[in-house]
Image 1 (cartoon, rainbow, N blue to C red):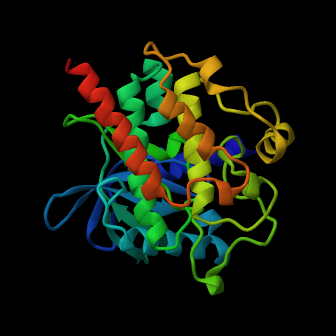
Image 2 (image 1 turned 60 degrees about the vertical axis):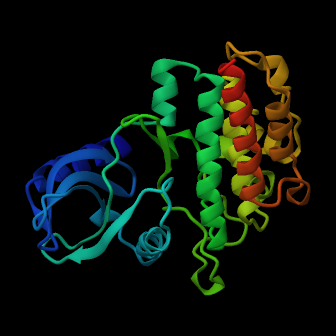
Length: 301
């Protein structure tokens, strides 16, 4: 059934290529498709500027879903950060009866696809990418927003021009600081289990420190080639809530020697109690910048 629905959406998306949304954005191709929306490559009818347009699928438009989509647009419009996908426009096309978000067109790979295709990254790249995402989380946290779905497929790598730039994308599950705009029921799971914080796995209230735990999971995976916990949904959630992952030092797979300070940071980020974790992304960013400079200086000698 899901495969049939996805195929139907894809056929509909292909029919929309060539259409102009809101009288301004001409759809020129399909970038990708998810359960809630299709992302098109597009260009401005006024300037010829290339961009990406995320169009909410008509068959999922319900008040809660639409509110999430509008919230995503509002959050993106409030962020002006080099490591967050840049917001351009938000609107509703009456002809297609579709809501859409216009963003910068990113060229490159998701971190997930890049590692799957090219294998383990060099240590300096691991530190650079996660440091850039920590910087993005710093800006997100200053708005009182929690991303809630931080994972390698939601980190985009712009390979050119060098050096590679990491972008945090997809704020569709983000948590808004306004309690009147709460769209997730108390105790409801939200996000991807492999990268879920202990408090989220247990249905407890979360804040920006939940995203820092997820960043710790990503760091762990980048240096070991595996997530801290695996298996079915329940074992993974129980692992995050109560389990102790194998030491990243013993599973280290990078060609460089294990880096003691980075291993300490990973352990700190993966602490179960959020009060004992780093209390903000700025601290994490500063530590990763320090490690990056140490690696750069060591490489220059």
